[in-house]
Image (cartoon, rainbow over all chains, first blue to last red; front, side):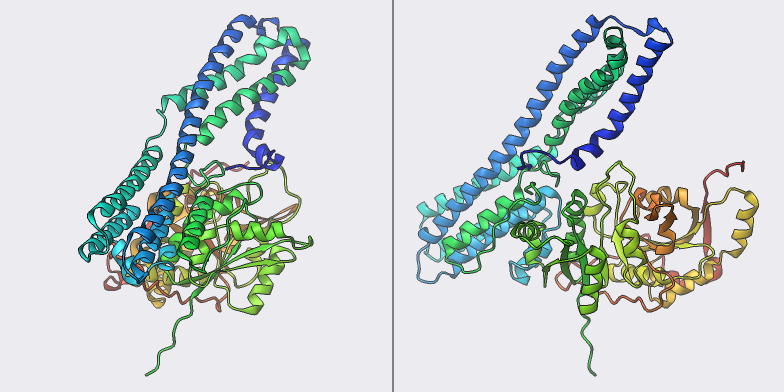
Length: 297
Length: 317
Protein backbone atom coordinates (compact mmCIF):
# COMPACT_ATOMS: atom_id res chain seq x y z
CA UNK A 1 0.00 0.00 0.00
CA UNK A 2 1.34 3.39 -0.96
CA UNK A 3 1.26 5.87 1.91
CA UNK A 4 3.48 8.64 0.61
CA UNK A 5 1.87 11.73 -0.86
CA UNK A 6 3.63 11.57 -4.19
CA UNK A 7 5.37 8.89 -6.16
CA UNK A 8 9.00 9.56 -6.98
CA UNK A 9 9.74 9.91 -10.67
CA UNK A 10 12.11 6.92 -10.59
CA UNK A 11 9.14 4.70 -9.78
CA UNK A 12 6.77 6.13 -12.36
CA UNK A 13 9.17 6.70 -15.24
CA UNK A 14 10.13 3.05 -15.98
CA UNK A 15 6.49 2.05 -16.19
CA UNK A 16 5.43 4.71 -18.67
CA UNK A 17 8.59 5.70 -20.51
CA UNK A 18 8.54 3.07 -23.24
CA UNK A 19 4.90 3.40 -24.23
CA UNK A 20 4.86 7.17 -23.96
CA UNK A 21 8.14 7.43 -25.80
CA UNK A 22 6.84 5.37 -28.70
CA UNK A 23 3.59 7.33 -28.77
CA UNK A 24 5.44 10.64 -28.74
CA UNK A 25 7.60 9.61 -31.68
CA UNK A 26 4.55 8.40 -33.54
CA UNK A 27 2.67 11.62 -32.82
CA UNK A 28 5.65 13.68 -33.88
CA UNK A 29 5.86 11.78 -37.15
CA UNK A 30 2.19 12.42 -37.88
CA UNK A 31 2.51 16.10 -37.02
CA UNK A 32 5.59 16.60 -39.18
CA UNK A 33 4.08 14.72 -42.11
CA UNK A 34 0.92 16.83 -41.89
CA UNK A 35 2.53 20.20 -41.34
CA UNK A 36 5.66 19.97 -43.45
CA UNK A 37 4.96 17.38 -46.10
CA UNK A 38 1.43 18.52 -46.85
CA UNK A 39 -0.18 15.10 -46.31
CA UNK A 40 -3.52 16.59 -45.31
CA UNK A 41 -5.34 13.29 -45.69
CA UNK A 42 -3.83 12.28 -42.33
CA UNK A 43 -6.37 14.46 -40.56
CA UNK A 44 -9.45 12.72 -39.19
CA UNK A 45 -12.64 14.38 -37.98
CA UNK A 46 -12.58 14.75 -34.21
CA UNK A 47 -16.21 13.77 -33.57
CA UNK A 48 -15.70 9.97 -33.68
CA UNK A 49 -12.64 10.29 -31.48
CA UNK A 50 -14.58 12.38 -29.01
CA UNK A 51 -17.32 9.80 -28.80
CA UNK A 52 -14.80 7.00 -28.51
CA UNK A 53 -13.00 8.84 -25.73
CA UNK A 54 -16.22 9.36 -23.81
CA UNK A 55 -17.25 5.71 -24.10
CA UNK A 56 -13.74 4.60 -23.16
CA UNK A 57 -13.78 6.84 -20.10
CA UNK A 58 -16.97 5.21 -18.87
CA UNK A 59 -15.56 1.74 -19.52
CA UNK A 60 -12.33 2.56 -17.67
CA UNK A 61 -14.21 4.12 -14.79
CA UNK A 62 -16.30 0.99 -14.36
CA UNK A 63 -13.20 -1.19 -14.49
CA UNK A 64 -11.34 1.00 -12.02
CA UNK A 65 -14.31 1.00 -9.65
CA UNK A 66 -14.52 -2.79 -9.80
CA UNK A 67 -10.81 -3.08 -9.07
CA UNK A 68 -11.11 -0.65 -6.19
CA UNK A 69 -14.01 -2.61 -4.78
CA UNK A 70 -11.83 -5.73 -4.65
CA UNK A 71 -8.97 -3.82 -3.07
CA UNK A 72 -11.22 -2.25 -0.47
CA UNK A 73 -12.97 -5.52 0.29
CA UNK A 74 -9.58 -7.12 0.92
CA UNK A 75 -8.73 -4.31 3.33
CA UNK A 76 -12.08 -4.72 5.09
CA UNK A 77 -11.53 -8.44 5.44
CA UNK A 78 -8.17 -7.90 7.07
CA UNK A 79 -9.74 -5.30 9.33
CA UNK A 80 -12.25 -7.95 10.36
CA UNK A 81 -9.38 -10.35 10.92
CA UNK A 82 -7.86 -7.86 13.36
CA UNK A 83 -11.14 -7.61 15.24
CA UNK A 84 -11.83 -11.32 15.34
CA UNK A 85 -8.27 -12.08 16.46
CA UNK A 86 -8.66 -9.67 19.37
CA UNK A 87 -12.06 -11.13 20.21
CA UNK A 88 -10.77 -14.68 20.15
CA UNK A 89 -7.86 -13.72 22.40
CA UNK A 90 -10.16 -12.01 24.86
CA UNK A 91 -12.43 -15.03 24.89
CA UNK A 92 -9.56 -17.47 25.28
CA UNK A 93 -8.04 -15.53 28.17
CA UNK A 94 -11.31 -14.93 30.03
CA UNK A 95 -13.67 -17.79 29.23
CA UNK A 96 -11.33 -20.71 29.86
CA UNK A 97 -11.43 -21.76 33.50
CA UNK A 98 -8.51 -22.96 35.54
CA UNK A 99 -5.46 -21.48 37.17
CA UNK A 100 -2.77 -22.47 34.68
CA UNK A 101 -2.35 -20.11 31.73
CA UNK A 102 -0.62 -22.57 29.43
CA UNK A 103 -3.75 -23.71 27.57
CA UNK A 104 -5.03 -20.17 27.25
CA UNK A 105 -1.71 -18.87 26.02
CA UNK A 106 -1.46 -21.76 23.59
CA UNK A 107 -4.73 -20.70 22.00
CA UNK A 108 -3.41 -17.17 21.59
CA UNK A 109 -0.14 -18.45 20.12
CA UNK A 110 -2.14 -20.54 17.66
CA UNK A 111 -4.05 -17.41 16.68
CA UNK A 112 -0.86 -15.42 16.12
CA UNK A 113 0.52 -18.25 14.03
CA UNK A 114 -2.76 -18.43 12.11
CA UNK A 115 -2.62 -14.77 11.12
CA UNK A 116 0.95 -15.03 9.88
CA UNK A 117 0.29 -18.26 8.03
CA UNK A 118 -2.74 -16.69 6.36
CA UNK A 119 -0.55 -13.85 5.14
CA UNK A 120 1.93 -16.35 3.69
CA UNK A 121 -0.89 -18.46 2.26
CA UNK A 122 -2.38 -15.51 0.38
CA UNK A 123 1.01 -14.45 -0.93
CA UNK A 124 1.94 -18.00 -1.87
CA UNK A 125 4.96 -17.82 0.41
CA UNK A 126 6.36 -20.73 2.39
CA UNK A 127 5.25 -20.18 6.02
CA UNK A 128 7.36 -22.84 7.71
CA UNK A 129 10.61 -20.94 8.31
CA UNK A 130 8.56 -18.45 10.28
CA UNK A 131 6.31 -21.00 11.97
CA UNK A 132 9.36 -23.00 13.04
CA UNK A 133 10.37 -19.99 15.10
CA UNK A 134 6.94 -19.69 16.67
CA UNK A 135 5.66 -23.22 17.27
CA UNK A 136 7.20 -26.41 18.54
CA UNK A 137 8.74 -28.93 16.14
CA UNK A 138 5.95 -31.48 16.51
CA UNK A 139 3.26 -28.87 15.82
CA UNK A 140 5.08 -27.66 12.72
CA UNK A 141 5.52 -31.25 11.56
CA UNK A 142 1.78 -31.83 11.97
CA UNK A 143 1.02 -28.73 9.93
CA UNK A 144 3.14 -29.96 7.01
CA UNK A 145 0.40 -32.48 6.28
CA UNK A 146 -1.90 -29.61 5.30
CA UNK A 147 -1.76 -27.86 1.96
CA UNK A 148 -3.89 -25.12 3.49
CA UNK A 149 -1.79 -24.35 6.57
CA UNK A 150 -4.11 -21.69 8.07
CA UNK A 151 -6.97 -24.16 7.90
CA UNK A 152 -4.77 -26.69 9.68
CA UNK A 153 -4.14 -24.17 12.43
CA UNK A 154 -7.86 -23.49 12.83
CA UNK A 155 -8.45 -27.22 13.08
CA UNK A 156 -5.78 -27.55 15.76
CA UNK A 157 -7.33 -24.69 17.70
CA UNK A 158 -10.74 -26.37 17.47
CA UNK A 159 -9.26 -29.64 18.73
CA UNK A 160 -7.74 -27.76 21.63
CA UNK A 161 -11.10 -26.22 22.50
CA UNK A 162 -12.69 -29.65 22.40
CA UNK A 163 -10.10 -30.99 24.83
CA UNK A 164 -10.75 -28.05 27.14
CA UNK A 165 -14.46 -28.80 26.99
CA UNK A 166 -13.86 -32.48 27.78
CA UNK A 167 -11.65 -31.43 30.71
CA UNK A 168 -14.42 -29.23 32.07
CA UNK A 169 -12.52 -25.96 31.65
CA UNK A 170 -15.06 -24.63 29.16
CA UNK A 171 -18.80 -25.21 29.31
CA UNK A 172 -20.93 -25.80 26.24
CA UNK A 173 -22.23 -22.24 26.08
CA UNK A 174 -18.72 -20.76 26.02
CA UNK A 175 -17.57 -23.42 23.59
CA UNK A 176 -20.25 -22.30 21.14
CA UNK A 177 -19.02 -18.71 21.36
CA UNK A 178 -15.39 -19.66 20.96
CA UNK A 179 -16.16 -21.92 18.04
CA UNK A 180 -18.28 -19.27 16.35
CA UNK A 181 -15.25 -16.97 16.42
CA UNK A 182 -13.24 -19.68 14.68
CA UNK A 183 -16.04 -19.96 12.13
CA UNK A 184 -15.88 -16.23 11.41
CA UNK A 185 -12.12 -16.48 11.00
CA UNK A 186 -12.68 -19.26 8.50
CA UNK A 187 -15.22 -17.09 6.66
CA UNK A 188 -12.68 -14.27 6.43
CA UNK A 189 -10.10 -16.68 5.07
CA UNK A 190 -12.55 -17.99 2.50
CA UNK A 191 -13.41 -14.50 1.32
CA UNK A 192 -9.72 -13.63 0.95
CA UNK A 193 -9.16 -16.81 -1.04
CA UNK A 194 -12.09 -15.89 -3.25
CA UNK A 195 -10.47 -12.56 -4.10
CA UNK A 196 -7.10 -14.23 -4.58
CA UNK A 197 -8.23 -17.01 -6.87
CA UNK A 198 -11.02 -15.28 -8.82
CA UNK A 199 -9.65 -12.44 -10.92
CA UNK A 200 -11.79 -9.87 -12.66
CA UNK A 201 -13.23 -11.34 -15.87
CA UNK A 202 -10.49 -11.23 -18.45
CA UNK A 203 -12.69 -9.23 -20.78
CA UNK A 204 -12.23 -6.30 -18.37
CA UNK A 205 -8.48 -6.66 -18.81
CA UNK A 206 -8.22 -7.34 -22.52
CA UNK A 207 -10.72 -4.91 -24.05
CA UNK A 208 -9.73 -1.78 -22.10
CA UNK A 209 -6.07 -2.38 -22.95
CA UNK A 210 -6.84 -2.87 -26.62
CA UNK A 211 -9.22 0.07 -26.84
CA UNK A 212 -6.86 2.44 -24.99
CA UNK A 213 -4.02 1.51 -27.34
CA UNK A 214 -6.27 2.03 -30.37
CA UNK A 215 -7.46 5.38 -29.07
CA UNK A 216 -3.91 6.57 -28.35
CA UNK A 217 -2.86 5.64 -31.88
CA UNK A 218 -5.84 7.41 -33.51
CA UNK A 219 -5.68 10.50 -31.32
CA UNK A 220 -2.96 12.43 -33.20
CA UNK A 221 -4.92 12.04 -36.43
CA UNK A 222 -7.84 13.85 -34.82
CA UNK A 223 -5.74 16.61 -33.25
CA UNK A 224 -3.26 17.37 -35.98
CA UNK A 225 -5.54 19.64 -38.01
CA UNK A 226 -6.21 21.92 -35.06
CA UNK A 227 -2.90 21.76 -33.24
CA UNK A 228 -0.30 21.27 -35.93
CA UNK A 229 3.18 20.75 -34.51
CA UNK A 230 1.83 20.96 -30.94
CA UNK A 231 0.00 17.68 -31.56
CA UNK A 232 2.66 15.44 -29.95
CA UNK A 233 2.45 17.29 -26.64
CA UNK A 234 -1.32 17.28 -26.42
CA UNK A 235 -1.71 13.76 -27.73
CA UNK A 236 0.94 12.33 -25.41
CA UNK A 237 -0.61 14.06 -22.42
CA UNK A 238 -4.09 12.71 -23.16
CA UNK A 239 -2.62 9.27 -23.86
CA UNK A 240 -0.85 9.40 -20.49
CA UNK A 241 -4.18 10.03 -18.78
CA UNK A 242 -5.86 7.06 -20.40
CA UNK A 243 -2.85 4.79 -19.91
CA UNK A 244 -2.72 5.74 -16.23
CA UNK A 245 -6.41 5.00 -15.76
CA UNK A 246 -5.97 1.61 -17.37
CA UNK A 247 -2.85 0.92 -15.30
CA UNK A 248 -4.48 1.89 -11.98
CA UNK A 249 -7.24 -0.65 -12.48
CA UNK A 250 -4.75 -3.38 -13.31
CA UNK A 251 -2.53 -2.58 -10.34
CA UNK A 252 -5.13 -2.70 -7.58
CA UNK A 253 -7.39 -5.52 -8.76
CA UNK A 254 -5.18 -8.17 -7.12
CA UNK A 255 -4.49 -7.11 -3.53
CA UNK A 256 -2.57 -10.26 -2.49
CA UNK A 257 0.19 -10.43 -5.09
CA UNK A 258 3.16 -9.21 -3.05
CA UNK A 259 3.38 -5.84 -4.76
CA UNK A 260 3.33 -2.25 -3.51
CA UNK A 261 -0.43 -2.15 -4.21
CA UNK A 262 -1.22 -4.98 -1.80
CA UNK A 263 -3.25 -4.90 1.34
CA UNK A 264 -0.57 -4.20 3.99
CA UNK A 265 -0.71 -7.70 5.42
CA UNK A 266 2.77 -7.65 6.96
CA UNK A 267 1.95 -4.55 8.95
CA UNK A 268 -1.50 -5.77 9.96
CA UNK A 269 -0.29 -9.20 11.02
CA UNK A 270 2.44 -7.59 13.11
CA UNK A 271 -0.13 -5.27 14.68
CA UNK A 272 -2.29 -8.25 15.56
CA UNK A 273 0.67 -10.02 17.11
CA UNK A 274 1.56 -6.97 19.19
CA UNK A 275 -2.00 -6.62 20.47
CA UNK A 276 -2.32 -10.30 21.28
CA UNK A 277 1.01 -10.57 23.05
CA UNK A 278 0.24 -7.53 25.16
CA UNK A 279 -3.12 -9.06 26.05
CA UNK A 280 -1.33 -12.23 27.13
CA UNK A 281 1.09 -10.24 29.23
CA UNK A 282 3.95 -11.59 27.13
CA UNK A 283 7.14 -9.55 27.34
CA UNK A 284 8.25 -10.61 23.85
CA UNK A 285 6.30 -7.90 22.06
CA UNK A 286 7.81 -7.30 18.62
CA UNK A 287 8.36 -3.84 17.19
CA UNK A 288 5.74 -2.40 14.89
CA UNK A 289 6.20 -2.52 11.13
CA UNK A 290 6.35 0.91 9.55
CA UNK A 291 6.47 2.02 5.98
CA UNK A 292 9.51 1.36 3.86
CA UNK A 293 10.35 4.31 1.66
CA UNK A 294 6.67 5.30 1.63
CA UNK A 295 5.30 1.82 1.00
CA UNK A 296 3.64 -0.46 3.52
CA UNK A 297 3.69 -4.19 2.86
CA UNK B 1 34.29 -40.89 16.58
CA UNK B 2 33.52 -37.21 16.71
CA UNK B 3 31.54 -35.47 14.00
CA UNK B 4 31.86 -31.83 13.18
CA UNK B 5 28.56 -29.98 13.11
CA UNK B 6 28.01 -28.21 9.83
CA UNK B 7 27.49 -24.51 10.42
CA UNK B 8 24.38 -22.87 8.99
CA UNK B 9 24.56 -21.67 5.40
CA UNK B 10 25.35 -17.96 5.61
CA UNK B 11 23.21 -15.86 3.27
CA UNK B 12 23.76 -12.12 2.93
CA UNK B 13 20.75 -10.30 1.51
CA UNK B 14 21.64 -6.86 0.12
CA UNK B 15 18.65 -4.58 0.04
CA UNK B 16 17.89 -1.06 -1.10
CA UNK B 17 14.18 -1.66 -0.43
CA UNK B 18 13.38 -1.76 -4.12
CA UNK B 19 10.50 -3.74 -5.61
CA UNK B 20 12.98 -6.39 -6.74
CA UNK B 21 14.15 -6.91 -3.17
CA UNK B 22 10.58 -7.43 -2.01
CA UNK B 23 9.98 -9.86 -4.87
CA UNK B 24 12.98 -11.90 -3.71
CA UNK B 25 11.48 -12.52 -0.27
CA UNK B 26 9.39 -15.61 -1.21
CA UNK B 27 12.44 -17.25 -2.75
CA UNK B 28 14.37 -16.74 0.48
CA UNK B 29 11.44 -18.09 2.48
CA UNK B 30 11.46 -21.20 0.30
CA UNK B 31 15.23 -21.56 0.64
CA UNK B 32 14.93 -21.11 4.40
CA UNK B 33 12.60 -24.09 4.53
CA UNK B 34 14.84 -26.31 2.38
CA UNK B 35 18.20 -25.69 4.04
CA UNK B 36 19.49 -24.57 7.41
CA UNK B 37 20.45 -21.01 6.65
CA UNK B 38 21.35 -17.96 8.66
CA UNK B 39 20.11 -14.79 7.03
CA UNK B 40 21.77 -11.39 7.30
CA UNK B 41 19.81 -8.47 5.85
CA UNK B 42 22.16 -5.67 4.96
CA UNK B 43 21.53 -2.11 3.89
CA UNK B 44 24.43 0.18 3.08
CA UNK B 45 23.50 3.82 3.58
CA UNK B 46 26.49 5.37 1.89
CA UNK B 47 27.93 8.58 3.25
CA UNK B 48 24.66 9.84 4.74
CA UNK B 49 24.44 9.74 8.53
CA UNK B 50 22.46 6.94 10.08
CA UNK B 51 18.89 8.03 10.85
CA UNK B 52 15.82 6.60 12.56
CA UNK B 53 14.10 6.46 9.17
CA UNK B 54 16.81 4.12 7.87
CA UNK B 55 16.47 1.91 10.92
CA UNK B 56 12.69 1.80 10.52
CA UNK B 57 13.05 0.94 6.85
CA UNK B 58 15.44 -1.88 7.61
CA UNK B 59 13.36 -3.26 10.50
CA UNK B 60 10.16 -3.06 8.45
CA UNK B 61 11.65 -4.81 5.43
CA UNK B 62 10.92 -8.55 5.40
CA UNK B 63 9.65 -8.39 9.01
CA UNK B 64 8.89 -12.12 9.23
CA UNK B 65 12.62 -12.82 8.96
CA UNK B 66 12.90 -11.88 12.64
CA UNK B 67 11.59 -15.38 13.34
CA UNK B 68 14.03 -17.10 11.00
CA UNK B 69 16.85 -18.93 12.71
CA UNK B 70 19.61 -16.48 13.65
CA UNK B 71 18.45 -13.65 11.41
CA UNK B 72 20.25 -10.36 11.89
CA UNK B 73 19.83 -6.93 10.36
CA UNK B 74 22.75 -4.65 9.69
CA UNK B 75 22.80 -0.98 8.74
CA UNK B 76 26.29 -0.25 7.52
CA UNK B 77 27.88 2.96 6.22
CA UNK B 78 29.60 3.04 2.87
CA UNK B 79 28.84 1.45 -0.44
CA UNK B 80 27.26 -2.00 -0.70
CA UNK B 81 30.55 -3.44 -1.95
CA UNK B 82 32.44 -2.06 1.05
CA UNK B 83 29.75 -3.39 3.34
CA UNK B 84 30.02 -6.86 1.84
CA UNK B 85 33.80 -6.81 2.28
CA UNK B 86 33.38 -5.75 5.89
CA UNK B 87 30.87 -8.51 6.64
CA UNK B 88 33.05 -11.05 4.93
CA UNK B 89 36.02 -10.02 6.99
CA UNK B 90 34.02 -10.67 10.15
CA UNK B 91 32.81 -14.12 9.20
CA UNK B 92 31.99 -16.53 6.39
CA UNK B 93 29.50 -15.58 3.67
CA UNK B 94 28.32 -18.44 1.48
CA UNK B 95 25.91 -16.60 -0.77
CA UNK B 96 25.10 -12.97 -1.54
CA UNK B 97 21.54 -12.24 -2.63
CA UNK B 98 21.43 -9.26 -4.99
CA UNK B 99 18.32 -8.93 -7.15
CA UNK B 100 18.48 -6.76 -10.24
CA UNK B 101 17.76 -3.09 -9.61
CA UNK B 102 14.45 -1.62 -10.65
CA UNK B 103 14.72 -0.63 -14.30
CA UNK B 104 15.32 3.07 -14.85
CA UNK B 105 14.89 3.09 -18.65
CA UNK B 106 17.84 5.47 -18.66
CA UNK B 107 21.53 4.83 -19.45
CA UNK B 108 23.79 4.11 -16.49
CA UNK B 109 27.17 5.76 -16.31
CA UNK B 110 29.17 3.36 -14.19
CA UNK B 111 29.60 -0.32 -13.51
CA UNK B 112 26.54 -1.99 -12.07
CA UNK B 113 26.63 -3.18 -8.47
CA UNK B 114 25.98 -6.77 -9.44
CA UNK B 115 28.87 -6.84 -11.88
CA UNK B 116 31.15 -5.49 -9.18
CA UNK B 117 29.87 -8.03 -6.67
CA UNK B 118 30.35 -10.85 -9.15
CA UNK B 119 33.95 -9.80 -9.78
CA UNK B 120 34.63 -9.75 -6.04
CA UNK B 121 36.48 -13.01 -5.73
CA UNK B 122 34.94 -15.96 -4.00
CA UNK B 123 31.40 -14.87 -3.26
CA UNK B 124 28.68 -16.66 -5.22
CA UNK B 125 25.87 -14.25 -6.03
CA UNK B 126 22.19 -15.13 -6.34
CA UNK B 127 20.23 -12.83 -8.60
CA UNK B 128 17.24 -12.60 -10.88
CA UNK B 129 15.89 -10.07 -13.34
CA UNK B 130 12.69 -9.09 -15.06
CA UNK B 131 12.61 -12.26 -17.15
CA UNK B 132 11.97 -14.46 -14.11
CA UNK B 133 8.25 -15.02 -13.60
CA UNK B 134 7.17 -14.19 -10.07
CA UNK B 135 5.64 -17.64 -9.57
CA UNK B 136 9.06 -19.25 -10.12
CA UNK B 137 10.30 -17.62 -6.93
CA UNK B 138 7.71 -19.45 -4.85
CA UNK B 139 8.51 -22.97 -6.09
CA UNK B 140 10.45 -25.67 -4.37
CA UNK B 141 13.73 -26.48 -6.08
CA UNK B 142 13.28 -29.55 -8.23
CA UNK B 143 15.59 -28.82 -11.16
CA UNK B 144 19.07 -27.33 -10.98
CA UNK B 145 20.90 -26.37 -14.17
CA UNK B 146 24.65 -25.84 -14.35
CA UNK B 147 26.09 -23.97 -17.35
CA UNK B 148 29.67 -24.43 -18.50
CA UNK B 149 31.00 -22.23 -21.25
CA UNK B 150 32.97 -24.07 -23.89
CA UNK B 151 36.58 -23.01 -23.94
CA UNK B 152 36.76 -22.00 -20.29
CA UNK B 153 38.64 -24.09 -17.80
CA UNK B 154 36.96 -22.90 -14.62
CA UNK B 155 34.40 -25.37 -13.37
CA UNK B 156 33.71 -24.38 -9.75
CA UNK B 157 30.06 -23.84 -10.55
CA UNK B 158 29.76 -27.57 -11.23
CA UNK B 159 30.92 -28.34 -7.70
CA UNK B 160 28.47 -25.89 -6.14
CA UNK B 161 25.56 -26.90 -8.37
CA UNK B 162 26.21 -30.56 -7.57
CA UNK B 163 26.26 -29.88 -3.83
CA UNK B 164 23.09 -27.83 -4.14
CA UNK B 165 21.25 -30.49 -6.17
CA UNK B 166 22.45 -33.26 -3.89
CA UNK B 167 21.31 -31.43 -0.76
CA UNK B 168 17.88 -30.64 -2.17
CA UNK B 169 17.48 -33.98 -3.93
CA UNK B 170 16.91 -32.11 -7.19
CA UNK B 171 17.56 -33.11 -10.78
CA UNK B 172 20.80 -31.67 -12.15
CA UNK B 173 21.10 -30.70 -15.80
CA UNK B 174 24.45 -29.87 -17.38
CA UNK B 175 24.48 -27.36 -20.22
CA UNK B 176 27.46 -26.52 -22.37
CA UNK B 177 27.16 -22.99 -23.70
CA UNK B 178 28.82 -21.89 -26.89
CA UNK B 179 29.90 -18.26 -27.02
CA UNK B 180 28.52 -16.06 -29.78
CA UNK B 181 29.41 -17.51 -33.18
CA UNK B 182 28.47 -16.50 -36.67
CA UNK B 183 30.36 -18.97 -38.83
CA UNK B 184 29.29 -22.58 -39.10
CA UNK B 185 32.91 -23.64 -39.26
CA UNK B 186 33.52 -22.32 -35.78
CA UNK B 187 30.75 -24.55 -34.48
CA UNK B 188 32.48 -27.58 -35.94
CA UNK B 189 35.74 -26.61 -34.25
CA UNK B 190 34.08 -26.11 -30.89
CA UNK B 191 32.10 -29.31 -31.12
CA UNK B 192 35.38 -31.18 -31.24
CA UNK B 193 36.48 -29.51 -28.03
CA UNK B 194 33.36 -30.32 -26.02
CA UNK B 195 34.20 -33.01 -23.55
CA UNK B 196 31.15 -34.20 -21.73
CA UNK B 197 33.08 -36.94 -19.93
CA UNK B 198 35.03 -34.36 -17.92
CA UNK B 199 31.83 -32.61 -16.89
CA UNK B 200 30.13 -35.83 -15.87
CA UNK B 201 33.23 -36.90 -13.94
CA UNK B 202 33.22 -33.55 -12.12
CA UNK B 203 29.61 -34.09 -11.06
CA UNK B 204 30.38 -37.60 -9.88
CA UNK B 205 33.38 -36.39 -7.88
CA UNK B 206 31.08 -33.87 -6.19
CA UNK B 207 28.82 -36.72 -5.18
CA UNK B 208 25.78 -35.78 -7.23
CA UNK B 209 26.12 -38.36 -10.00
CA UNK B 210 22.79 -39.92 -9.21
CA UNK B 211 21.11 -36.51 -9.48
CA UNK B 212 22.34 -35.94 -13.04
CA UNK B 213 19.84 -35.93 -15.87
CA UNK B 214 20.84 -38.38 -18.62
CA UNK B 215 21.42 -35.75 -21.29
CA UNK B 216 24.16 -33.15 -21.38
CA UNK B 217 22.79 -30.32 -23.43
CA UNK B 218 24.53 -27.77 -25.60
CA UNK B 219 23.29 -24.37 -26.65
CA UNK B 220 24.44 -20.86 -27.37
CA UNK B 221 23.76 -17.87 -25.15
CA UNK B 222 20.80 -16.62 -27.10
CA UNK B 223 18.93 -19.90 -26.74
CA UNK B 224 19.87 -20.46 -23.11
CA UNK B 225 16.61 -18.94 -21.72
CA UNK B 226 14.59 -21.21 -24.01
CA UNK B 227 16.57 -24.25 -22.93
CA UNK B 228 16.02 -23.40 -19.28
CA UNK B 229 12.29 -23.22 -19.92
CA UNK B 230 12.45 -26.59 -21.62
CA UNK B 231 14.27 -28.05 -18.61
CA UNK B 232 11.79 -26.34 -16.26
CA UNK B 233 14.78 -25.01 -14.36
CA UNK B 234 14.29 -23.62 -10.87
CA UNK B 235 17.81 -22.25 -10.56
CA UNK B 236 20.83 -22.00 -12.84
CA UNK B 237 24.51 -21.84 -11.93
CA UNK B 238 26.70 -19.70 -14.19
CA UNK B 239 30.37 -18.87 -14.40
CA UNK B 240 30.66 -15.22 -13.42
CA UNK B 241 33.00 -14.57 -16.36
CA UNK B 242 30.16 -15.77 -18.56
CA UNK B 243 27.68 -13.44 -16.89
CA UNK B 244 29.56 -10.13 -16.97
CA UNK B 245 30.68 -8.08 -19.97
CA UNK B 246 32.68 -4.93 -20.29
CA UNK B 247 31.01 -2.00 -21.99
CA UNK B 248 32.36 1.45 -22.65
CA UNK B 249 30.81 2.86 -19.47
CA UNK B 250 31.93 0.02 -17.22
CA UNK B 251 31.03 -3.54 -16.44
CA UNK B 252 27.49 -4.84 -16.79
CA UNK B 253 25.67 -8.07 -16.31
CA UNK B 254 25.03 -9.55 -19.73
CA UNK B 255 21.49 -8.95 -20.88
CA UNK B 256 20.67 -12.67 -21.12
CA UNK B 257 21.12 -13.03 -17.33
CA UNK B 258 18.08 -10.84 -16.66
CA UNK B 259 16.10 -12.68 -19.33
CA UNK B 260 16.58 -16.06 -17.67
CA UNK B 261 13.32 -17.67 -16.53
CA UNK B 262 14.73 -18.58 -13.13
CA UNK B 263 17.15 -17.13 -10.57
CA UNK B 264 20.85 -17.46 -11.33
CA UNK B 265 23.83 -18.09 -9.06
CA UNK B 266 27.00 -16.55 -10.49
CA UNK B 267 30.18 -18.29 -9.36
CA UNK B 268 33.79 -17.51 -10.19
CA UNK B 269 34.59 -20.70 -12.07
CA UNK B 270 38.33 -20.32 -11.60
CA UNK B 271 38.19 -20.25 -7.81
CA UNK B 272 38.95 -23.71 -6.49
CA UNK B 273 38.60 -22.64 -2.84
CA UNK B 274 34.88 -21.84 -3.13
CA UNK B 275 33.10 -24.77 -1.55
CA UNK B 276 29.71 -25.24 -0.02
CA UNK B 277 28.63 -27.59 2.69
CA UNK B 278 24.90 -27.03 2.80
CA UNK B 279 23.10 -28.35 5.87
CA UNK B 280 19.53 -29.41 5.31
CA UNK B 281 16.82 -27.95 7.48
CA UNK B 282 16.11 -30.61 10.13
CA UNK B 283 12.46 -29.59 10.31
CA UNK B 284 11.90 -29.65 6.56
CA UNK B 285 9.67 -32.24 4.92
CA UNK B 286 11.69 -35.09 3.40
CA UNK B 287 12.04 -34.57 -0.35
CA UNK B 288 11.03 -37.47 -2.55
CA UNK B 289 13.30 -38.78 -5.26
CA UNK B 290 12.31 -37.44 -8.68
CA UNK B 291 11.01 -40.50 -10.59
CA UNK B 292 12.43 -39.38 -13.94
CA UNK B 293 16.01 -39.14 -12.69
CA UNK B 294 18.05 -42.08 -13.93
CA UNK B 295 20.83 -43.40 -11.77
CA UNK B 296 23.81 -42.00 -13.62
CA UNK B 297 26.26 -43.97 -11.55
CA UNK B 298 25.13 -47.13 -13.29
CA UNK B 299 25.77 -45.75 -16.77
CA UNK B 300 29.26 -45.61 -18.21
CA UNK B 301 30.31 -42.10 -19.14
CA UNK B 302 30.76 -43.01 -22.84
CA UNK B 303 27.02 -43.39 -23.14
CA UNK B 304 26.36 -39.75 -22.27
CA UNK B 305 23.98 -38.33 -24.82
CA UNK B 306 24.59 -34.81 -26.04
CA UNK B 307 21.69 -32.83 -27.44
CA UNK B 308 22.31 -29.59 -29.22
CA UNK B 309 20.11 -26.52 -29.44
CA UNK B 310 21.46 -23.62 -31.44
CA UNK B 311 20.17 -20.34 -32.78
CA UNK B 312 20.08 -20.02 -36.58
CA UNK B 313 23.52 -19.09 -37.83
CA UNK B 314 23.55 -15.51 -39.13
CA UNK B 315 25.45 -14.55 -42.24
CA UNK B 316 28.54 -12.48 -41.49
CA UNK B 317 28.61 -8.98 -42.95
